[in-house]
Image (cartoon, rainbow, N blue to C red; front, side, top):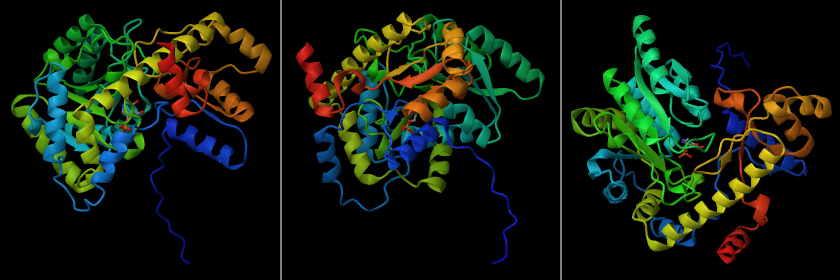
Length: 403
Ligand code: PLP
């Protein structure tokens, strides 16, 4: 056979999936594993959601590119109930929020500001598109949002360099730190975005998993409705990441309409439509029937309690741990334990420590460097199995019986 001379573009596996694959290899070799790397809720999928999916299993036809009417109406209702009045024409569904965010970056073109630290894929997706990702530090204690003052400076510098920023990403509540930006900071960010004509991409995939149900998410769509795209999915609150279903809520006005046309054009060339049976189940889920509301509430309480318990252990051991407000991640900074880790285990960076945890114990966690941040930090998904045992139903029962 004639050798092929084309070199495929080198693209590394996303850090979260790389950990998953390494754990899968260990598990295949019969070694024990503890998967705390990939972001998955530790709850089972609800039987009512499975029933809804099977009701539509015979839908084999392609659907409308932006999503079925049924789904877009349900999602519009979901946002309207959260204080963001929405019509179905402003919703676009796709196979997960990852491809939708990628399509958004493609549609918006140009450089994007992302918080440091932030979810692994924002900067990686921008790099795939040859767009610049400008990492901007977050205000102290407020993960998921670039400091508004630093963002304003970055806009000036980017314009002077002839590469103006087109968009800024926020994550509310945040992955990796689990913290939630304050209303004041988000309002300032909206001002900077308006002054510099930036689109705001607000990733609110963890919004229904705020640990305190009385707390609300300060979505930038409240103060900058003309320029904010809000993104969410079924992946985290209902533990249906593998079903691949995400949705975006587009801004009001003519810009939102142009963005919808651009996004649906991109979608039509890449995924055509999200899987029809999953869209049907998602319409059911976004309609918020009582049994799913109750399941999300259980998940919220389960994760809040396990995150708090594990955070306390890290703090007691001397690590610095931002106090999470939502989701199921912890982001301990192990710098204060540096001497001990060096002396006892010979590791000096988070990357070395995560390598050691994986090789020696089969524990999959991620170093802060994967999130564009401190090499001494670790990001771990706090699995409910750590406190409540491995069996799904047993975990839910244990939690229910605590109240
Ligand atoms: N956004 C954030 C902040 C995430 O943590 C994740 C998943 O880890 C995603 C988006 C991707 O979600 P999906 O599974 O819907 O593509």
